[in-house]
Length: 368
Ligand SMILES: Cc1cc2nc3c(=O)[nH]c(=O)nc-3n(C[C@H](O)[C@H](O)[C@H](O)COP(=O)(O)OP(=O)(O)OC[C@H]3O[C@@H](n4cnc5c(N)ncnc54)[C@H](O)[C@@H]3O)c2cc1C
Picture (tube, rainbow, N blue to C red):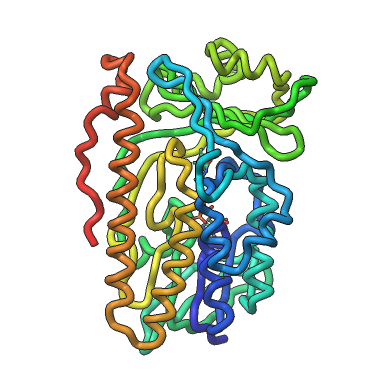
């Protein structure tokens, strides 16, 4: 079997790369999950509108019925603040039904001509003249294929890029524990995300489509709070005891419906993020602290940018890979500056390890 581009991972970044390459090239998109799972990470900033418009998907995205997000309400440094999107030229943002969003992107990639193989994964990869020889594992057995370019869109593990010698540089130890529930109260939701700093980290909560709500605590993996995350009932009890969040949860009548789940949420960057015949996109290239709410935007943006770079590379332009790496370095630099600024705005707990670590961010930025 022959392909021009093999994309490992059909999440937001991989599906975006696929749907932008499929009209011009033979694209194979593969994922270990047959259908997208319900995952944390649902806030999409208003600027995503421009990417959907560039990809010819804006009207269709609007028809998907995701919930509008009108801004953030934060309790940061003790002061309540609202940052609304009223004056944002792109309008409001979104609280997505994440599984529905990912299924939609996968289907767009297929409609534009990509072949989707799921469940499937990659078990071997070796360079050959003009590209790569790849071995895939599928439910019907092993499959061999040749491709000119490979794209790692497999998320934070960067499984494909690490096979090619790239390394991830982790900048902190942030983890997130979260819980889904429903809103049983009579009051409506105001479409704002809630963010609240506490000595051991910060809380996040947002209403989701269908009167669902997510509740999440972010802290460092080596701090005492992280050890308590798995204790039955601890997350919800702590949330209710947190002044602003507790009041919000009471008001909306939050009732937990799922078990607590925990995932890595640290900032990290792949070095390098592209090389001869390969690119990394989304979290596989750069993973962001959820405080930035930029992970999905970055997945869409780098999916599109890598598709353009891949296009150029397949047409023989020698600088395509370097240009893409420089773009990643630019994104990483801007992200770190912004994140450092956000954390520096909370100054109540200079002696708490979580906040002390974030007052000085010395890790060098990604090199192009
Ligand atoms: C706690 C938390 C909260 C977050 N909140 C937000 C938020 O509110 N807003 C926001 O914008 N971002 C948020 N993010 C970040 C956001 O979820 C990610 O940036 C986004 O999912 C990245 O998309 P991706 O396509 O690069 O990777 P992923 O979404 O991780 O997709 C990777 C895909 O690759 C597949 N895959 C992985 N390995 C293999 C393999 N070996 N073989 C085959 N398939 C494979 C997976 O099944 C998956 O479908 C959050 C992240 C965390 C951890």
